[in-house]
Length: 120
Length: 404
Image (tube, rainbow over all chains, first blue to last red; front, side):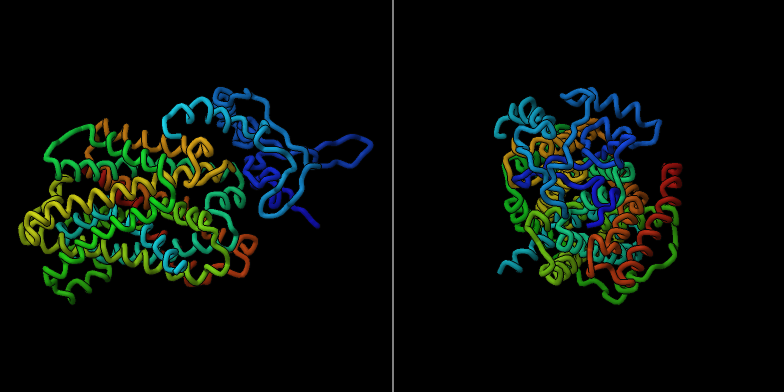
């Protein structure tokens, strides 16, 4: 199967093995060494990765914002492409999303904000 | 039976989204200032909206993707940020106008002028989103929204001159106050072609798990629902023309619209108007807050649904909460509700290309819609009406700002 990296991978919806959303493919990481052909190794998720894709004047501001807002700080989260189990309308990754760092912000918002509001 | 229920989705979208404070205020003002002459703006807006809503349902049914997600996937994150930011800010602004309408309704019913109606209204909407499910909101809004039919009843009681009204359906040059004329025309089109409806409708279609077999039903739903909404706006304009023009009333303030039904139905008319206004605005608030949340959550790939407990869709719930708070804050600051309504509707027209052009490209991309792509008629009609609304907006907004 031919895969167009930009059309078929970048910005696609990622889901865990239960089919629950993990986020979108914010960036794609490629490994290159002198003795092997370059290959795609990971998907990257996170505010820092998103900030890097913007025109330069916006990068600094968004990176700062992402750094302040994200409970993980600045490091982006990586998902190994070797764990892909299905590639279609969404990209299914063989991990347990409930514990994955990809959902750390979701959990943070839930525990620190939403769960404290009655009736949640 | 299931199909019949699906059609209600179209109707609710039209009640909440079509007859809301924007359509009410712009149609009433148009009728009071220019009689039937601006009916064409409602007709064009409705036709365009029918096509657009049908497209957003078709996109969801075929690609199983809501509009916002498909936009990010097709155009990439950097471009997607432009409609995301523009439509979210616009959503907050339009939400503030709906709160203005709801506050007026509450003020009319209780007789109490109260600056805190806006945050109270926002809180009530939030509570319903926090505790309710999509189907409760959908069915509740369509049931209560039927009260807006009071405007249609009023039209028939007034026995309008149908031939003269029909003449207004064709665009014509203004006979007086050209600046005002074009600005109201732009506001009407912005009020009709509300982009948040598209996010709401396509998310609803995904939430209801539509597939390719739903494409024909979607066509019926979109057409009937939006026609229904358009008919209500036309009814408001006709009533305003027949009630305000002979009395020489010009609408300068929001509360001047209130006695619209009083000459026809006396005291009942007053309360029915307040109820119709309040319910339509409240329904629209729910839809706008959800639409912004859909847009953001789908764009970033978070879990989204109105059917889960808030803690299970934490970021999604946080976004609609923040949107409602934003709208309420503008309400507390106390901007003139009529001015903010007209301006946010005109601004919608000016921003339409940002939302609609990428959408049209998606609807012609076989990668997303397969063999269910747009035909040349829908492409041409939508392009022409959006271009007209945009050009009129770009010309008339600066003039209106300078004039006032």
